[in-house]
Image (cartoon, rainbow, N blue to C red):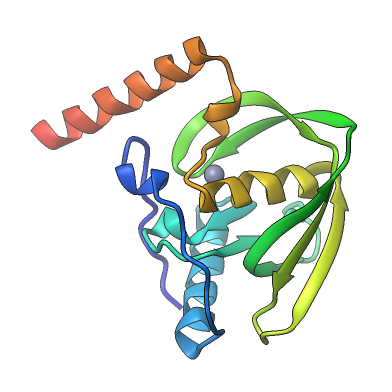
Length: 172
Ligand code: ZN
């Protein structure tokens, strides 16, 4: 297992649309293992493959609290097949937009169809933090970020801040 570097805003790769995984190969399982290692190390509760620069439809999630037993979920080709009309608001963050948090409103419950790491077809229904996390990570597979759900004013401000930081790093 390898901890892979996480790409940061404004890396244009974050805007790529990820490709469907045709078959769960040993390479995909190795990618999942690396993603869990990277996510736990960060630490974070969700990671999409594109965040380690791989444009494939793979997501890892674990919303268990630090003192609770781990509940890792690996999702290949996840797809939201139903979302509730009720909405809920969570303060979201993203490992690709470090130390920035903002409230986002999304459907409170979702049902997600996906393939697991053994290649089996699965479906889960989630609410609470897991529902938000699933939607946030599936957004990544479409090149979408949580800041796309906030006001343009706030988004422009954070994009500018990260662009400046990247420029500074480049000049050093
Ligand atoms: Zn994210």
